Amino acid sequence: MKSRKLGRFVLSHGVIEQAPEDVMRLMGRMIVVRAESRYDMDGVEYTAISDYFSCVPAGSIVPEYRFAFSGGDIIPEKIN
Image (cartoon, rainbow, N blue to C red; front, side, top):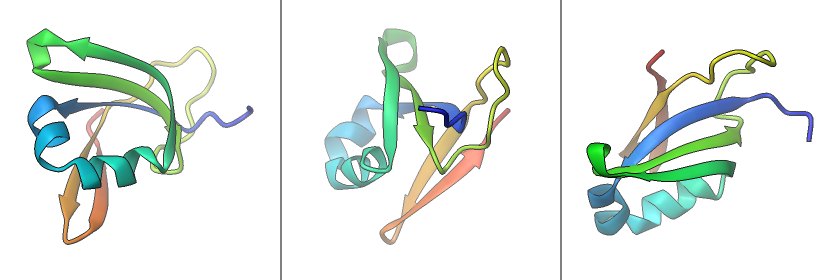
C-alpha cells in the first residue's frame, strides 16, 4: 500500500460503548495499522490510513485528529 494519508486519534471507551454505530461507520472508512488501549486516556489510541487524513511524508510525525459525530455525519478535525 502506497497511501501516506495517516492520522492518530483516540476514541474514548464511553463513545465506543454508547455510540457503536457511529464508531463502526468511522472504522469502516479506514485501515487501522496500530491500536493501543490507553488507561491514561480512558480510551483506545489508533493510527490509521484514511481519506480523512492528510498525506504524511515518510519519517514525519503522524498528526493527531479528533472526530465528532453529528446527525449521521463524521467530522474530522486536525489537532496538530
